[in-house]
Image 1 (cartoon, rainbow, N blue to C red):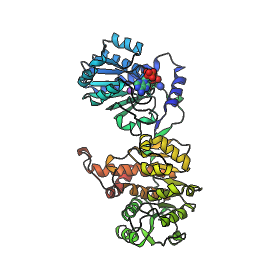
Image 2 (spheres, rainbow, N blue to C red; image 1 turned 45 degrees about the vertical axis):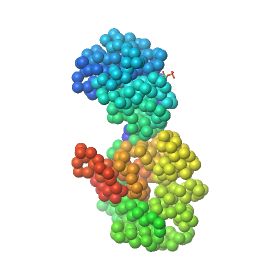
Image 3 (cartoon, protein in one colour; image 1 turned 135 degrees about the vertical axis):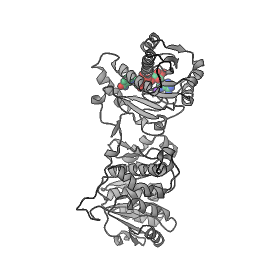
Image 4 (tube, rainbow, N blue to C red; image 1 turned 180 degrees about the horizontal axis):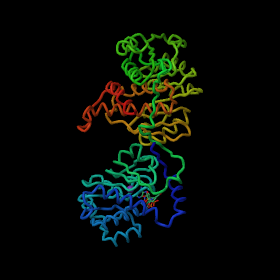
Amino acid sequence: MRYAHEVGNVRAAEGALMARLPEGTLMQRAAAGLARVCAGLLDRVYGADVVVLAGSGDNGGDALYAGARLARRGARVRVVAAGSRLHQAGLADLRAAGGRLIETAAAGEAVAEADLVIDGLTGIGGAGALREPHATLARAASEASGTVVACDVPSGVDASSGRVEGAAVRADVTVTFGTLKPGLLVDPGASYCGVVELVDIGLGPYLNDPDVVSPAAEDVRPPLPGAESDKYRRGVVGILAGGDEFTGAAVLATGGAVHGGAGMVRFASVPHAVELVRHRWPEAVTTVIEPGAKALDAIGRVQAWVVGPGLGTGDDAEELISAVLSTDLPVLVDADGLTVLSRRRDLLTRDAPTLLTPHAGELARLLDADRTAIEARRLEYVRRAAAELDATVLLKGSTTVIAEPDRPVRVNPTGTPWLATAGTGDVLSGLTGALLAGGMSALDAACAGAYLHGLAARLAAGGPHPEAGESPISAYDVITALPDAFRTLR
Ligand SMILES: NC(=O)C1=CN([C@@H]2O[C@H](COP(=O)(O)OP(=O)(O)OC[C@H]3O[C@@H](n4cnc5c(N)ncnc54)[C@H](OP(=O)(O)O)[C@@H]3O)[C@@H](O)[C@H]2O)[C@@H](O)CC1
Ligand SMILES: [K+]
């Protein structure tokens, strides 16, 4: 797991640690780590052209001390001061090492020709949209042809949330201190960071529980069949999807489940959807159901339900969703099911686990909120959704985030922009339903489902020669790549 802490937590740990150390120690540790990474990025430090963008806080101080370390190794270091103040001791050290301050008016040219730009405008103290001249400097850095290294956080990115309200530095590398910050893991902030390097400054023992975690491959443990397993013990997932209008979603969700490790997939729907699913996935056991409260009775036993993809949003769909949520089994609700729930939130009052898998638009309907606001503040809204709806919520999108009341939010590290194509969400719901039926908790199933789905998409997009770049993929390609994604976890 990778752990991330919000600004308040970082400051509390910093205070506790600083009380035990001589003044300035932490800043020197940070600066040393930053300078080390910068030096590694340069072909040669001696003679390299380095520009430090320094704000008036300690983030600027770190950058100035790092600049001084590079200057002592022979780099030509120039500093642009943003704002009225500069960290005085840092500036004095840089000057003593041969660095010099230049006018803001000359900054554009200096940044454009630099081999390396260090962004020390704002760190965890940054708040709201960057003001001037910070915003202009951030834009210049983002367009620089040299390597751009952000100190702690790319300036303009909110460290706790990943929110970006105006200009922000697009970094090639972000060197962060003590612990990751949630804004480095969650879009839009994450997309500004480049490669994130964590520098240990000794904060670890003083940090509280993380606010956000991001799983690595070893944290994703889908259930494995043992010698004793049979299809029932491995988990039977029931899929209620498709209708007279939409059938593709049913085929794709079933495919996700068939390749998601379920012992058996039961699929139930109207005759046309059943016919298509049978044709494409002979592995699935299918049932034609009549609308009505007794629809589930004909299907046979399952360990978890997936309901919603392509189901429609009318009275029949509502009745089916109501019946499924009245069971004492884990239920994953997706797509049309979520639209129905946005007018029937009362159906969510239940004891068994409920997993909701909305994209921003569906969550906007569920919370009566604004879609754009959700996309800009994914962490805030996924937490709010989990608390208000009393469910596990997986918010799909450029960064998929998963929340359960009173737990750290999980951020999925896999995926590719090519995943933004019709039908991939249906695959995710079938896959995750299979993991739920296999006995995983809603949080772990959501996490493993998102991880495997994103990995399968990357494998599909990268093909046999990923070094040659990625290509467009279809939802069906994601299903086909799932076995390879599972294999990478072994
Ligand atoms: N915590 C740790 O463990 C360690 C922390 N360390 C380092 O300290 C950093 C935190 O330093 P910090 O607290 O001085 O805040 P920082 O990020 O420099 O920003 C404050 C300045 O930004 C300005 N400003 C704010 N918003 C703005 C805007 N929208 N647009 C423009 N300006 C804006 C604000 O201006 P003001 O509002 O005062 O006018 C103020 O001058 C941290 O990120 C890390 O690098 C390490 O040295 C060691 C270990
Ligand atoms: K910064």
